[in-house]
Amino acid sequence: MTARAGDPQSAQDDFSLVLGGPLFQLFRRMHLTGNALELVRRRIVVIALVAWVPLLVLSIIDGKAAGSAVKVPFLYDIDVHVRFLIALPLLIAAELIVHQRMRAVVGQFVSQGLVPDAVRERFDSVLAGALRLRNSVAAEVLIIAFVYIVGIFVVWRFYGALSVPTWYAAPEGGSIRPHLAGWWYFFVSLPIFQFILLRWYFRLFIWMRFLWQTSRLPLAYAPMHPDRMGGIGFLSRVSHAFAPLLVAQGALLAGTLANRILFEGAVLTSFKLEIAAVVAVAVAVILVPLLVFVAPLATAKRTALREYGQLARRYVDDFDAKWLRGRAPADEPLIGSADIQSLADLGNSYEVVRTMRTVPITRDTLIQLVAMTLLPIVPLLLTMISLEELFKQLLKIVL
Image 1 (cartoon, rainbow, N blue to C red):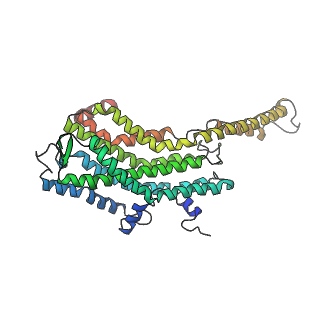
Image 2 (tube, rainbow, N blue to C red):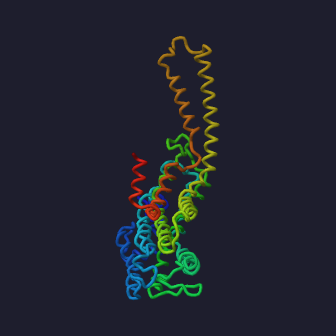
């Protein structure tokens, strides 16, 4: 019998962090998406038209799109272009990538035998709770409120705005006086970007909550699984789906730093701590949720080592008694006996258990995610060294 939409089996086979919620339903009514997040280019174009194009038009009307009317004209503001033409499209495109990569992940808990029949009902309850939270209207309303109350009037105003005359505002007595384009920037463009970004972190919170609740269930881990992670190695591979989100975070930081360097005279090396902090936090948000499985994996490994150790001891004792103490039948030759191969196989099995990881994160995954976050910051090296000199140094290293 085919599972219907909304049934536990259907949800397990087609779980999605992003395929739901009020914004998704709004996009469907506006024909900006289909049932599986199609039309991604249409969404990117429409949102860019709303968030970026009015800023260009209004800054032209203000006379601050280019020229020397202000220190930071609109066309020279790297941060605003990176934010709305690179980071924002990446955040939108990431939804489709995460949906496609994650849709079968939950089903693998069941299909790989990690969820025994005895805990199936509890697992379905955890899954249902994640989907309810994903579809919550109250959650997205609270995100909007947070964006305007904290994100715009506190965080951006005191920590994000430049302290020099710009196309969007002019410093005035310790505060800022918005220009015509600035009003759209403050009340439309920035809130759109911050809402989509914070909505992503809310989705990651749902993922972390789901993993934490799942890790508390008595799952049937497989210490001899070839993935050396007890059978949950597929979770580590899913982390790569969040790479566009990390690139967007890196691009956002790069745009902010570029403005500070070009218009406030800062140097890239003075932001080492900020860069390290952003990279550490961004990567941690993706990988730390997997650490909830450390304790149950460690327990499964200890249990398996004890059980396989006892099995190995019994086999070794029998092997010793048979072949070294003269208990083997006289007509059974040692050469060609399967006993030695079985002993070797048992040793290999024990070695697989012994080398099982209790941290379901690989070094390659960590390096790749860090590299993706740092990638947009690499061009800022050109503010410290010319392109010609950079090529010379690279040739010295290579040759």
